Length: 214
Image (cartoon, rainbow, N blue to C red; front, side, top):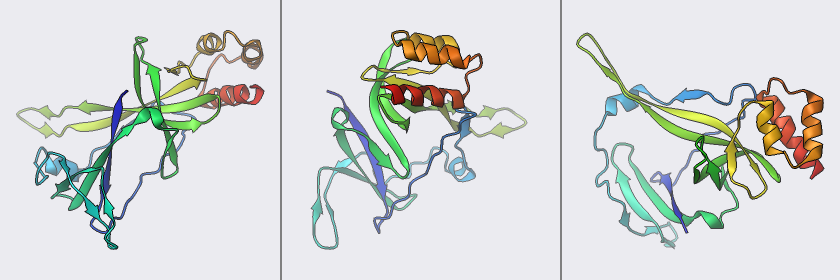
């Protein structure tokens, strides 16, 4: 049974903020560069009082103890960070702001199976999911100039049918014919719509139709 670490940050006044996402129907495989001048200035500085997570207890203003977490103090942001170990197999979904995430098995491009978190764009027996992965772009160091490294978030769409592992979507008619090869109504729908070019909008319509007829 795998255990997944979820990290949460809280300020001294226990405030929180969440970044809200959206579903871009025309460009799901985009790359978002997540680098700021502030992050570049920090570089590789050690901004924790102690980088190790330590067992501790948080007491609220009414003296209620909150236990079961490990803590560390971020001096740079002046925040107390805490994390807990969660058994992902017991989760239905996690809500963060307006987004919902599920944890599931999935196949990579080499058909090796892994597990991880996905944003759930469409729920149902057939789910449309978005997977995010980090990619580090190293900086360039030359005599004339220096460029800072950056972190990119790669986004890809996945489809999950029933209890089967999620699969990365290939934007082709043949891919969906293979996914729904045992469902005559779905094959008829795909052939009738003549999906020569499969856009994000058409992917959404395929999944919604499947959920309507199940």
